[in-house]
Image 1 (cartoon, helix red, strand yellow):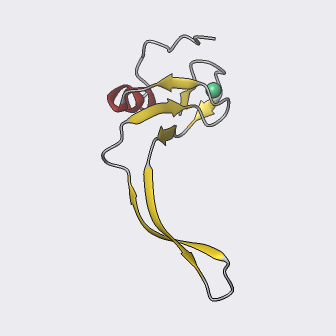
Image 2 (cartoon, rainbow, N blue to C red; image 1 turned 180 degrees about the vertical axis):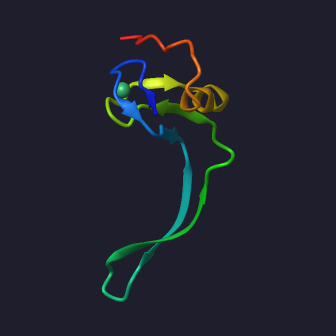
Length: 83
Ligand SMILES: [Zn+2]
């Protein structure tokens, strides 16, 4: 099991946050109430924005290769909080 470089808790996965585009149809029914019919979600054309620790939500990295290395227990350069 690997540990988060920020909170040091054991983690078995990372949360991958990715921007996505959702397209849908906005329709009105016979009573005039609006409904959305979701047709497709497009993920591949949007870059992964960040990988977060599931415990403390710290952004560990923004690169998939680095995220995999972290989950493999390898040493990574930690992301410095910019705030
Ligand atoms: Zn953490």
